[in-house]
Length: 121
Length: 107
Image (cartoon, each protein chain N blue to C red):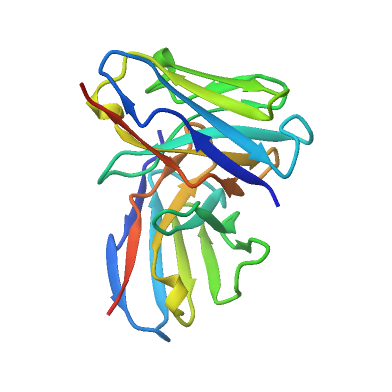
């Protein structure tokens, strides 16, 4: 059974960089054909797809965040990470990591429980 | 971006009820539509993918239908564990987008 778990600081100051890690267990992050995504949900708002990284290392970002986002993978640790620069209060949200099989009909089959990140001084 | 409009935003129902949630896309998306269930403090769970395919392990009381722009999620007989939030998501193209969610509450 694949499991994903987000980790990182719960509080980030405005203008700083938000950094989160997703640890994958129950399978190798580098085996198979999968995308590994980050998704967030600000309080009272809908879910927003941030971006993804493929097993090969190629990335795809939401244009609304592209200038501030970097997603990377560390296969030796079976983890992938999110960095979001120049954060503001609008970046306060629950952040999820998720797995997307590289199939014709895309979907997220496994998610982490989510971690709340608050941007505040 | 493709806009996903989900309704209702909240719904009160009783155990045993039949419930339908709808999702409308701002442009045709064929059957690139998924449904998720989310409970507080738990990982979101995939219920339905490709509009009508039941994810492995999901009870058959959940079903999905639709194509093009209009989709529905139906729960045929509500169980206590079904009270949660439900989200649709289009995977026709990136950026993937989600509906605003439907909160299903006990009446």
